[in-house]
Image (cartoon, rainbow over all chains, first blue to last red; front, side):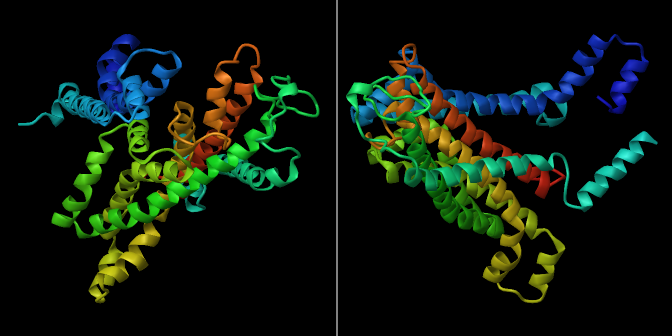
Length: 107
Length: 289
């Protein structure tokens, strides 16, 4: 917020909303997206607990039931699927960097 | 004028090794020391056993004699919470110690060697990192079975990649320092450079990470026990107590409130310690996260 380009945007007479949306947000978005991407991973783990508490029939409970029943093929499958989801989300966040910030786009 | 004054103040704080919130580490540390003393001494000082069943007093609300009330089998909730702390801290300490024992050497060697050895060590650990912590722990418990020692081992496996990453980053950073180059120029062998120069300079990062991991370990242990794949009953565990109390939540809220608060206090303590340590030891915030 104290950077030169923000001061310049204000000096141009832009309304504060435009300054925030056009100039501050794009520059603050990269760490934000990184954290969001990692949070998805934690949420996939938390899903097991939440689905058990609220008896939701999701992939988390499926994993847990399979573990408790020693149903190893199902454990393997669900763990793999969740791992793949996590990797996809991470790939998406990495690709989003390029959308947000043209400087990191591949030539 | 104003800005230059604050810059000088920050520089002075940095020079004296203090920056940000120095009370944070102290508060966190005192919370943890308090809990540690409670967990170590509590079982010997407090009357009553966590496993004595008094069916006549089942679900009795808190009284001055029994400040946390009694659970559905008439066991003392206070006694169970104190004993459960012992289990939680034991699991957290063992798992973090194991993770450091295996993760640190791996990470340091990977960061020091670089090249193919780095790839050989870090790629498999990256695979482990692709799975969310709780899911991986649940899956490992499915393979190992349940029990106190096994929870620690499972958590240690979950943590090894994190610790190794921190160790690797620290080794990479230290390797570029002039004094390490100097040691190399003097003909120091690789093990000597690692142990004498790189390890001491990476302890800050590892210490902070270890204290974050302790908080996480307490949380994950509680989650695993809650789900029924962690500590086996009748050993008291905070997660097990939450699971037991869930059915009585409306009739006997003390069965879930006190174990829940106990988890909050422990996790908060370790997180504050970690945050405070980071502010204190590493004012520039250069730690790899």
